[in-house]
Image 1: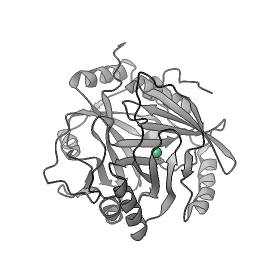
Image 2: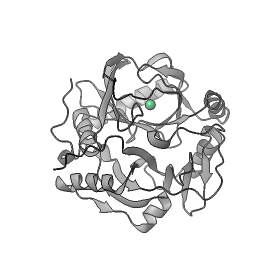
Image 3: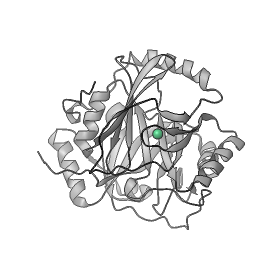
Image 4: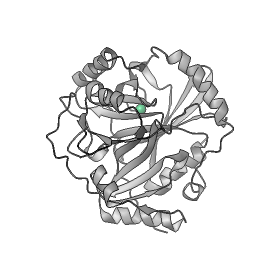
Length: 335
Ligand SMILES: [Fe+2]
């Protein structure tokens, strides 16, 4: 078993979504959020945030959900290390085809199972998009070493999920947030794989095997460089008639200013600005009370949806959630 630490060499690179709602996603991704829309490949939509050819890959299909996360690795040695870890624990790793790599704009791709049904893909060497970058968010998005942003996942098995990301990517705990929503207590664990405060947030109802979220991710987050672009995107989301889940507010832990819109596939989309980054020499994990210092108040249909979620949550108690136990270690029991 390898003892190499891959922390810092792993970056969230792209997100794969299955949807039938291409027309809505065009308007949402390009016109509201302000990303570069690329339809040069038949039957898929790709969005760019930067030079990389693909940051969001949308395939046609009925799931209306995120189906895979793509992880950019700094070098082939890191790829080999992670692949060996997974195979070493008896979990199959499948090489991606040349076509898979081409549509994602990457070199050398492999995939393996992840918790909560979210397939994980690893790759090296992203290729640049061919066309000049066209963004409505004129100041651009913050990516680079910090990756494209973050995802938040709801789970019935938070200790195993944390164990999984620690085992596979050497993820570190940044902090916890305890939050009560409509009388239900949640604990959220924030994990980082590089200087971005968190790349995976793991939300769980405390002491109850219940997952109120239908989709494999509860939200994804991308970060604009300029505050003006956050404000303009907020206005575009409203003007184009997309639903706002949470109005603008500021998070307690990473201090990011953000809003949450509802994407055409139903999971939420957080657009943020100016989160802190972690200094490894001084950082100490803490527990924050509540997700927001101010704002992030529910808008629109949110109340109706909260009741819908309780229905989903009750149904979720009957379903088995795959934790990929071979990669979850003993789990991380932290409460
Ligand atoms: Fe977030």
